[in-house]
Length: 315
Ligand code: UDP
Ligand code: MG
Image (cartoon, rainbow, N blue to C red; front, side, top):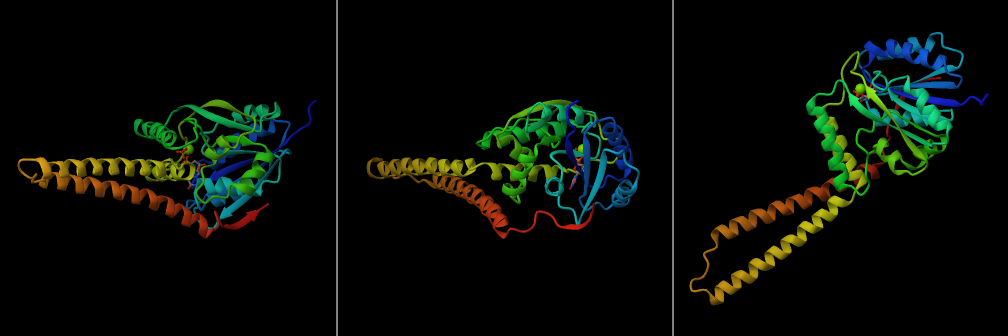
């Protein structure tokens, strides 16, 4: 018989009170039929709906012999990415699996992730083949997100990747030590970090309880953040834009001088001036906006504020 493994499962929780008990039942059922030893780390990301009480009940409840539970409570809502990082920071076992608490990441797939890890993969990513509860708008947005990200970044991110993944202790160590950016996109990090990786496919069921807490606004800011965190292409685009305008200006200057000295009547030029000025200013503002985005991101990193603040740990 192969030796058993130690695995931590990080579960981010934000306003999941309604579904937590069901999630825990399903997870327990899954893990108790598994020979490996599991530490389940629930990270309560400042829930406002009684998720804390549900988590404390789970913490005190009877657990299968191969399962232990840890509870990390944030002082306020810091976001899903921060919750995952906190879980990874607090894990004491070997490999780590991150997953959502809403059962949209099927617990049955844990076995498949662990098997891929056992067969020598340091990173096991998952790919969502379908998503039952996504409307046209969110699907379209998600596709646009990835094509935008890929077109303006130097790295290529696979679409439909999710925050359901397994990383070895070594990769977790790298995330803990070296990937402490305030502007994080862990799913992106682990796709670019190298190592031996593989992908497992799954179908995401609709949320059984509650509702998705990612608003369109949050998705948009995640996308913008990811672009500026992963790419200098916008900077290069702004240089290109400047070159185009220099050439445009030169051509206009040559044309105006030629007309002035050789034309029968000097050009009146009002329309040209208006169009030229508004186009130049728009381009200038775009360049300034791009620079400001990088400047803002740099300031945020430089301030070095904590990624999350822990209020309480139950271990
Ligand atoms: N979540 C979190 N902090 C947040 C928002 C969400 O920890 O600020 C958790 C949430 O409880 C869930 C996971 O992150 O376990 C994914 O969130 P959600 O289901 O709302 O996102 P979606 O599945 O729609 O992408
Ligand atoms: Mg979800």
